[in-house]
Length: 125
Image (cartoon, rainbow, N blue to C red; front, side):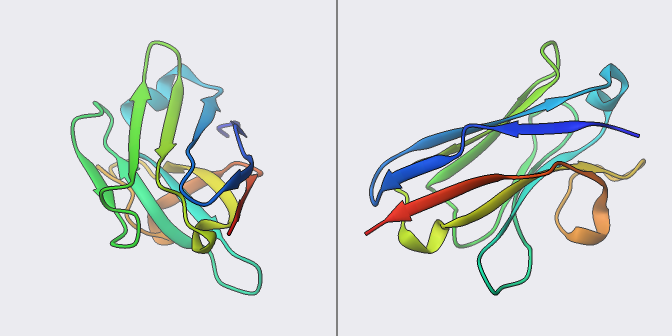
């Protein structure tokens, strides 16, 4: 089982930026797709962004396109989510996700094999 540990969450004002990091425990996972999801209070977990094994192919939810950027450093076994121009609607717990084998890029909950415990992001208005 892959261990995923998120960090970088916190409280930020609307319009601000945060960078989330996800440390991946096993080097072998550098060959799989990775993603970020979030869950707002009282809502279901939703897809935010996904990246393929190489870092060259990415996918984003419409609500974050142009504001968020997912990337990965396979040498450091780390996946990042740069979040800019944050809005109160971005508030929630952000989860790192590892894709199932043969999933090129994570785009939904069904593509995920392992989850981190999450890091909380709060955007004040």
